Amino acid sequence: MVDENVSFEDNLKELEEIVEKLEKGDVPLDNAIEEFKKAMDLVKACDDKLKDAQETIAKIVNENGEIVEFNVD
Image 1 (tube, helix red, strand yellow):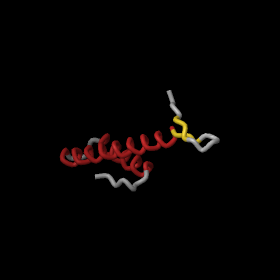
Image 2 (cartoon, helix red, strand yellow; image 1 turned 180 degrees about the vertical axis):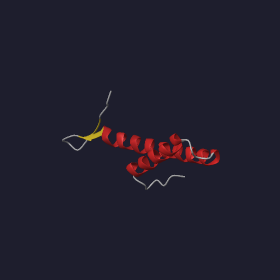
Image 3 (spheres, helix red, strand yellow; image 1 turned 180 degrees about the horizontal axis):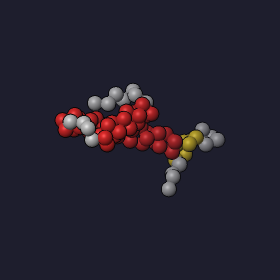
Image 4 (cartoon, helix red, strand yellow; image 1 turned 60 degrees about the vertical axis):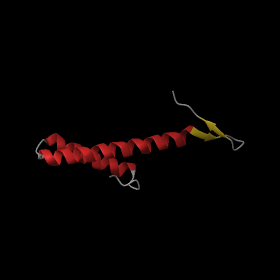
């Protein structure tokens, strides 16, 4: 399970380290499976943080203090 309080950057760094380990190919199969599972959890955590950031950025406050939806196509 990934700690939700860890920053996006820290999760991404850990994910990159796991990918490097797995790419070398010298990880025993059981360890590789565990590392892969952890990597998938990290991918989900990063994706969730990106989606939250996108939703936050998509809301812009106009001059009257009203929230205006901002769509990026």
